[in-house]
Image: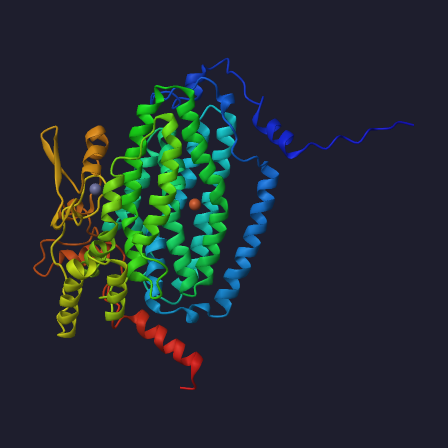
Length: 517
Ligand code: FE
Ligand code: ZN
């Protein structure tokens, strides 16, 4: 009779160690530098990958199990919301415009994060870092999929959702988030980890997700709320990965500090500029408001970020350049951004409107000392023009910042009545920037940014027309042609909210559910 002893069951820690330690080998028939070609050219020095501390210990089988459970719960909520016509329980159809902004501007970034982490995971020579990047890559793929599924329900009923992928690569304001991520994935693996893992996931992510997800909850959108919470539950892993990445780089070699510091400066500013869209969403696009941009900035940036940079001071890291300006601008950002979108309504696939008198009072209360002084008169003027049947539309195209690609809408530090312009000459050409932050980024890597695909420049060069368009025709309307090339449904997607199809449908459908008419 033979007896076999039952194999000893390994603990999670041991299983994780088996997965991430001792599996690696030194290559023989190809040199290591050729197997990991991106590991050294950024100048980051790593002496011992074993010093990488895995911030979370999750085996692959446990990962699939947790994620599958989350998916089940998420899809149950999304299905229930769709089947019960949950959209009719929204506060107001104006809310849906924040989803259009999210689907066209943010969801494609989730997909780029998926690709970026897959690439970086392949490129880093340390196994622990590689496994963590692999999991985050899978998380990001899940995020983009759940977001598309959740918002596909709105596409059946409301305008402006149909061509989000096409628009992301072409529409003027979407070049802002697109160029942010294109910049990150074309950087080296260590810079990507500081750009996305640290600066975005650790420092700025709460300023993106909390406003959108609380906004969804406050305005009755259970579908978006559910995908938001489900994504946020992966976020603790992403944040610890970003923090471990920066600490690891700083601990490995003192020469890494100046390189890392420049990346912090650069990626804080690039991320902050993208958040301009969030500021405007929070203050102007939510019918029922959660908190002001100023309040969000104070909690998530000034308090949390301030504590983080105090903690990192022991490595010699200082707060990012531009931090103070971002703090000073918190009282202007959203009003300046919304004013721009209002003027360019004809070129955006979501609706805009003048804030109501009550909403303006809310803004005045949240922004004492700035809203009534600088912005209320402008909105009231536009409201009067609308009432007179003469809605203001800006028929010219704005100059764009060469780095963040935002129109020149920001004002001088300390003077909210003057637009801020900076410029640099490179290789005989003059380039323009919205701020000192963007100019610094350009001056450090001009070859990268002279290649920027700036929507306004491309329009003026005639590169944003359909092939069959004839610019020599007597009745050629360039703006109309560009909007058509964007695949917007002209006069529907890009109409003012007042009188829009979304507004009419929502009213009519809601009335059907609450009356016998
Ligand atoms: Fe994500
Ligand atoms: Zn800029």
